[in-house]
Length: 209
Length: 205
Image (cartoon, rainbow over all chains, first blue to last red; front, side, top):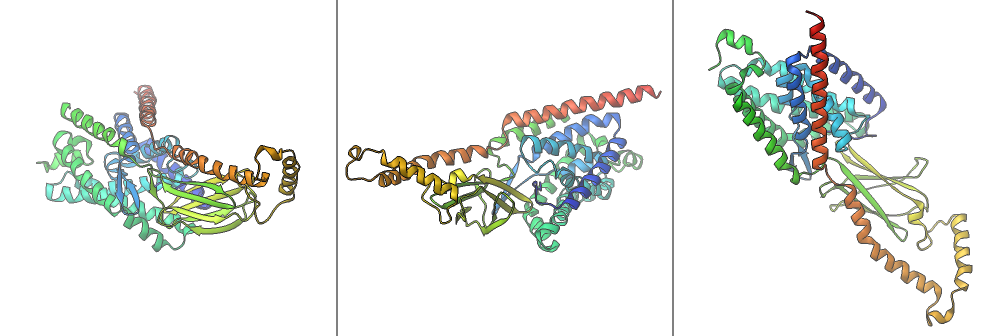
C-alpha cells in the first residue's frame, strides 16, 4: 500500500500532505506523557510489519497492522505511522518522500476511523469483542485500500477499477490482520486491559469477564 | 507486566525470524542493450516477476517514444528507436513504479543502429582510419571488421552475467542493519518525546 514517487498528481500529493500534517498535529496534541512510549513501540511494530510478506497470486502483500495501531493509539496513530513511513522510505525505499503525506493518510485515517467505530466494543463480552476486533483489523486494511484507489484514480483510470484491484489484492491481508487483531485484543484483555480503549467505562460497568 | 514483556519478546523474535524470507515491497526495472535491441527485466524485488506491467520509454526531454507490456517473465524487448539516452519507466499497478536510465553509450558502439547521428558517423569514420593500421598479418583470413564483430559478440556474452549480477545487487531487500537502525531511530524519538512532554508537564504544576 506504499505508493511510489511519480505516480500521483500534484494536487493529490498536496492534499495528502496537508491532511497528514493536520492528523499528526492532532495526534501529538492528544498524546499523553505515558502514551509516548506506547506510540513508539507500535510505530516500531508497524515499521517491521511491512517486512512480513504474504505471497498472493501474482503480487505479494505485506502486513500493515494499522488496525492495531489505531485501536491502541487513536489519533496518535498519525504521528506513529508517519514516523514509521519516513523510516521505511529512508531505509527500505518503500513508497517515497513526496508521497509520505498521501501514504500516511491512506494508512492512518482508517486506523482512526476504526478506533472510533470498534474501540468502544473491544472490552464488551467476548461474543461482541472478537468480531469487533476482526472488523477493526480487516476494516482498516479495507478502508486503506479504498483510499489508495481514491488517490490513484486521477492517474490510473476509473476509481472502481483501481479500488477493486487494490481491495481484492489485499483480501488475504485483511483476513490475516483481522485474526492478528483478535489475538492481540484477547491477549491484552487478559494481561493488560488498561491498554485497550474504553477501559475506564468497562470497569465502571464491570463488563470484563 | 512480566507476561506482557514475554509476549512482546516473543513477537519481536517472530518478527526478526521472518526477516530472512522477506520480499521487498517495491518494483525494480533493469535494462541492457544487445546490438540495437534493448532488453528489460522487471520484478518485485525478491524475484517475483512483474506480469503485464506497463513499460514506457522516454527520451531525455521527456517525450514518450514507445510503450509496451511485460510478458509473464517480466521481460519486455524493443528495438532502440535511436542512439540517445533512454529513460525506461515501469508502472506495475497499484502505485508501484520505478525507472532505469540507459545511456547512449550503452547503445552506441554496437552495430550501427538504424538512425545514425552525425556524431556516431564521425566516430565510425575515426574507427575506419584506425582499422587500416591493423596489420593484415596479425590474423590472416579475417578482416578487421570481422574481428571486431566477433570480439563484441563474445564480450557481450561474457558481460551478460555481470550485468545481471549488478541488477540483482540493486534490488537487495532491507537488511538487518536497516531494521535495527530504524528501530533505533524510533527509540530515540520516543526518548525525545518523553523528554519534551515531561518538561511541559513539570512547568505547569
